[in-house]
Length: 261
Image (tube, rainbow, N blue to C red; front, side):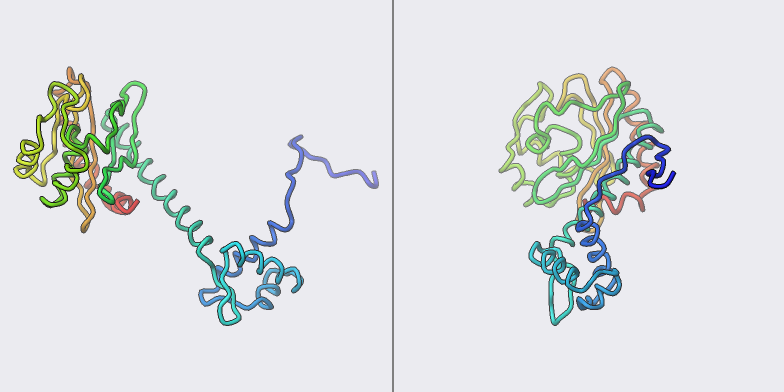
């Protein structure tokens, strides 16, 4: 019938769209397509917007930091670049999480990925299952690097000065009966560690758990992959970490990007 609204097969109401937001986004996309920027008249023409509307939106986007006007042309501003970096970061995190999940399923143990950044241990991602749960972070991983395989592996990749600096800020303390007792003992252990071999700790961080971590170094970045198993299944630890090394070796190109996270 004339005047009848078109049928909506899904039965859901149409979304409410904000026209000014749509127009602003089109302008941002147009600016991004020009490496050297573009003037307002060109941007208005490319987006099909009236020039006064384009000017108003461009001024607003510039005021908010999403654009920058220089020599009569508009280029992306700091706020837009932060959005782009955030999207790239999320993409890298998603890729490493997917890799960890594949390795977790292939090996049947929890898999951890951590980096040493800005003087601190950063546990970037963990992948586990209800049947093979990760170690509960009952004591802050950043402050107890001396006690767990992840921290010991990362510290073993640092030079002596960086290790001492870390331990000055996060002193060695026993958190289980098996934890290394003092800083000099830990430093000696780190000095004699084989750089290419897994670091193994047995119940030093969590009672009932044994862990192994493998070093991954790219340039000046220190990183590690690790696994854990219940202490009564310790016989699984070394075969599992050997398999992880093989998996990481095959997919190292996928892992290299994540070190910069």
